[in-house]
Length: 294
Image (tube, rainbow, N blue to C red):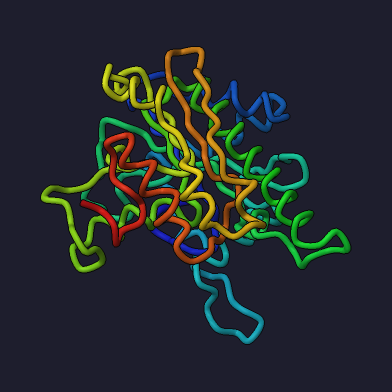
């Protein structure tokens, strides 16, 4: 999602070199998810307008109102545009809709880790696609399995976009991804703040892609050895536990992907304590559990 308007949006961020032919990579990805010539051309034009600073979503949604006549928050308007198609084209991912946006063009969110040498693409969807509805006749296990299928599809989309654009890095959190890094950069929000400005590659994410430039010998060796400890898994809710497992991919351009969470949009208490932090420690990275970062 655009980092400047955090809200009820699920986002996965794919970071590419600004001087690369990332538009061609995005076009390849869009065609792979069903875009024809006209739709792909239109979508790329929207991204170009966003990159040039001529399409801020805050300004685009400024005249939206709620049913009571009060101004509609931009975050809500953006989320609604991911359910009913508006400016951003939508695509089907086995029953839920998503799009591709720019995450923080021109540093519209004014974050300290902004890097003008990269472009941040974002796979975006309404978070409701991942939280699921009420339990059906199949019970909690069936509902969780349905949510996990959506999470697996999200991972496949991240891998495909990373592959087609030869991503430098890609990442997705359980909840709002960009907002997590924003909070991690505030000393008041963590027990042990880092000494320097934190950037997304400092962390292990529920879905992480490392491009070849980040895969030094030490990280590669750690990825080969990383594992989920049964003692940690045993502390996770039994309905959630089957949907936490390690899945690694070696991408064709030399990148590597790790996904260990498949339930997105919400989480239970202490999941990051028992899952995210031990895995991050094994890989020599920071945990997205902000209370347990050394």
